[in-house]
Length: 425
Image 1 (cartoon, rainbow, N blue to C red):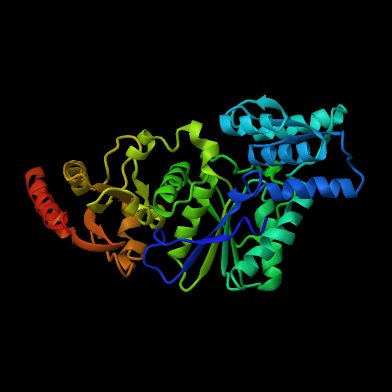
Image 2: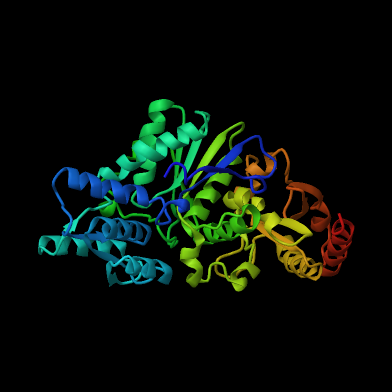
């Protein structure tokens, strides 16, 4: 597996930075994901302990990748396998499991907790043996003995940060244990879906369902990622770096880009846990999905959103605006309400791309410590401010001019002149 899953240096997505960002391509494993490692480890260790033997029936709750990996291993080693998964998992993952000969049972969409409960019930009824990826220490053991050492060796011991999605948490638990043993200063960053987000393969677990193998002390930072941010980054990765991966990997990359904006001279490795072909039927890579990118984003997502800008047509602009009211859609800033629709239309006419970034509520923006006010490249003084983004950096801008333009006609004249000056650069 080490020879298959090397590190790929990103060349475009990080933009101008002193950091090195590397992708560990776990989709190159035999069954197509990072879960090949714990699947084999759990079966081999259970055999060694005398818990299972070929011919037995194994049961596992899965959101996809572990199920595929177990199905491959079960086929090779001669086990029957029953997999329980939410009904909304992609057709490609279901088809792969069935191709290896696994039996599939469905629970309602999104209900991994129900799948886990059903697996335990079936085991209690004598229908098979649950390996339990969520509580089996042989899951993180696989990463302690393989993924962690590979990351250390492949970076010549220079790795400073690792970013990984968290589902069972086995990947980050095992790699953390190994990497911290080599250098306690290495930072482990995990990501989970933001409240209400649905990102295949990772979960925001309720307290009572937290994986037993999870130890919060082994993770230095946990970042919440929205479904929209993860999906946009997944699409941009394919277009900018040639990395065709799943949505949880896009989430990990989003987290890495945010992290990169906060540190200098770092070597950041990101686990790309599977391949994008498992998600084609979901529509995430459809032309319609791509046409709607980039969508408006909040301030905390700006580092990953602006990194994705080169994936979209030039000329490219970023407009910083006041947050909209969730009920009315109008922002607290009248200048934003006047300028934003005009900016959208004029950039559309120019065939370009407009990234809308919300700076926050009025009190948040008025705080003199707002990060956009002190960013060495941005130095925002007012909203709205529209900046021409070129070669990964801010260029000419209009801001005070938009504040001074108190009619829609004056705003249009100001923006039309600005776009005319910058569109050809």
